[in-house]
Amino acid sequence: MSPLPVSVDPWGTLHAVPEHGATFGNRGVLHDRDRHVVRGWQGRRWIICRTEFRGRTREVLPVGGYTGLFFRDEATALAAGHRPCFECRRADAQAFLEAAQCVGGTAALDEALHRERLADDARPRDGLRAGRRLHPALTGADVEGAIAISSDDGVVVFSDGTWRRWTFGALGGAVAAGTLVGLLTPPTAIAALSAGYRPTDVPLIAEP
Image 1 (cartoon, one colour):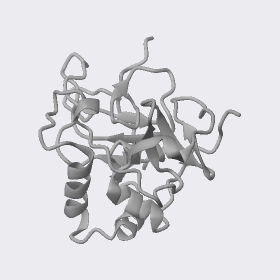
Image 2 (cartoon, rainbow, N blue to C red):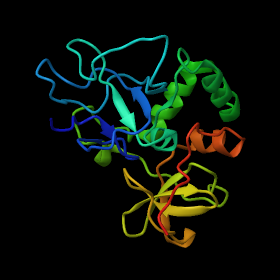
Image 3 (cartoon, rainbow, N blue to C red):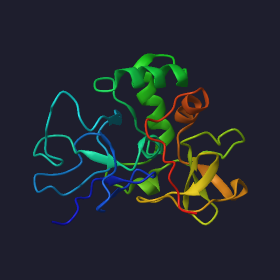
Image 4 (cartoon, rainbow, N blue to C red):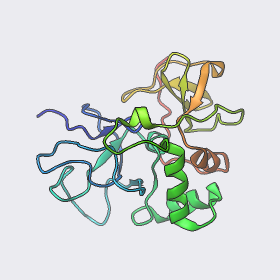
């Protein structure tokens, strides 16, 4: 059976790859009745969930239900513009909200992340990569789990004290911080990481 297009890269784009990843989430109903992905998002509530919660089971692309998405890890989900779910990950979601110091609660957090991940003219049916905002690679953004773009248009993640090439599989080699041209991880998420929030599964295993 061919992989379904539900694996998400740090840009937020969906791919059909064998590696589903260990982190689950959603951003609304992205597929039609024929299980074809027809939009990049629905609404401003983009969340990161647990893969198991109270014994619930569901299809990944159910008719009429939200599209189940998979991420390599939580750092990837944060870069794509998601935040922890307040139902299945309440403690993590509260810790993220407090670390981000986002006044106004969950609604304000979702609004802030939406402004930071997408350009003003981005539309759900456009490619997410074209609509993504890049943020300045400021000094101090080298915090565990931050994800950036390098000068050769590669995606890199700060893992175990080093910027490394991001892939759906094992991480690649080290990349010099001076080659970074912008951050994909939104400023609100960078603020949370800088204040001590730690993704549940920051990718630490890397190739030499």
